Length: 196
Image (tube, rainbow, N blue to C red; front, side, top):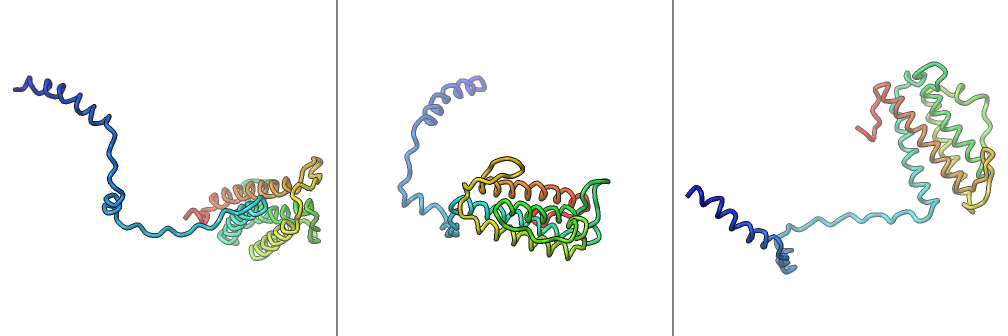
């Protein structure tokens, strides 16, 4: 009997292969639905933002929220921390972001607010840094909202671009320093709030 088992298996293989190659007959829809538990209604999704400017603001919202969350999460006594000499401190990076928001907005025709001295060196207290960051984001949003023609040519850093190009540069600058701020925070034992 033991020698018959491999032989029986060999005879059974063609019928298994044949069954696998046969198309499956679909159950009637009523039978399929009866077998499935009732599903919860899916929440409606908001329509995707229409146009480049709307997409810009979605991206800006994300970057701004994360930068502000980090600024709030880093303890005040760590704002002077820097990873090495001649490298920006935590507060200086946040003020560089604010300064970038003001400066890059000038390429859209917005006038930067008057500052007393170097903001990166003079604004160092946590509460002042956070307040200046908020003002700078509001300034940037107002400048972008005022833009009518995204294709309007403008010269930026000696290169010809458009208002659209300025907006792309704004986002690039924000994300560059968001990444830097994440690294600084983690080096000081602060886990970004959205990663907890």
